[in-house]
Image (cartoon, rainbow, N blue to C red; front, side, top):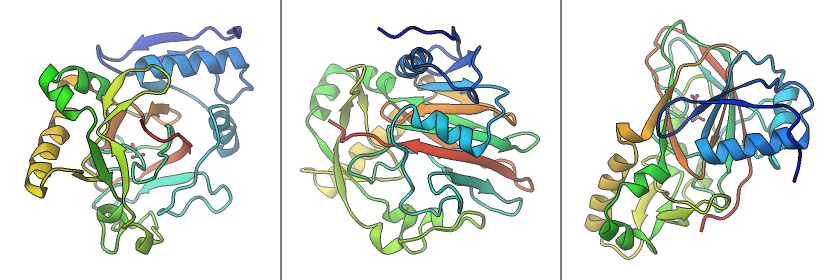
Length: 282
Ligand code: SIN
């Protein structure tokens, strides 16, 4: 067993998910024990928040690589110098912001990214918070009958509504998208996903990318997804992160959905996102 040389102090943000972690400087070379403790905390709390971090792009990349290989976004241009970095920018006159709806990152990929690591560079004077929803809690709250109906169902995911020609995410002024012709590719994932590290089951559908459930008529599928989209993000399963410059958040895409609120028109918001590659959901 590895030894933790940096003791983490973990303060849960709500009763259901999220924890603020203190006692660790993410710009330093962390030992394996500390990384293992952060990974365990991520499994336990799903969203980790580290305040007052002074992180260059290079140090953020180095931290992310401790959790696995980093991904590049297939439909959004990455940073020119570091393609694995997505500069998540909202200009004062943007009418939408990146991630402005409930979603789980890149579920349109056969192997969606396991985690995302977002660093706040510049935030509006107020607003621009990010909401998270715990999909294990959402699953646990379903009746036994509903759970057994959903177990074994397979959903279809595609990026076309977001990244196809005229898609919602192509309307941002600040963030340039690409490859709209590839966005229609459909992938299949289980409706209920088992977390590969904790073994817990969770809902694995999201409004941005899930378009249907196999084996149901389109009417049945729409009704079921409408219910699941609302159920998965009920207030009781959520936490809300208020950013400050220097805040870093890391979330587990295998167990949460998130939503970047756009309630700060007239102000700029600049974040730096990296994502860690994941495995095929089962
Ligand atoms: C995202 O969906 O990754 C963006 C989250 C945010 O900007 O708060």
